[in-house]
Length: 62
Ligand SMILES: [Zn+2]
Image (cartoon, rainbow, N blue to C red):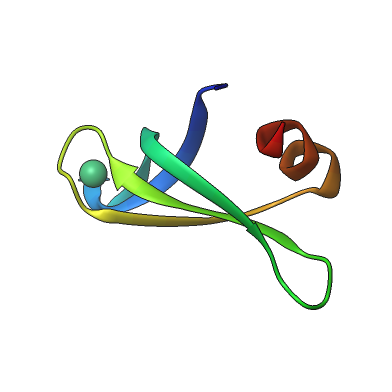
């Protein structure tokens, strides 16, 4: 599976969320056809959530 990067709200640099790799991402498509990914931050283990473009979401679901 492709590596997915998302902002982690817990890993902050200069008080801003930091881009981290998402571990075990689960991609879902909601009733509006919008893709999102849920996973865990590889650094702190915090929950991560990210909206994805349709192209990215479809690629991740393969
Ligand atoms: Zn983190």
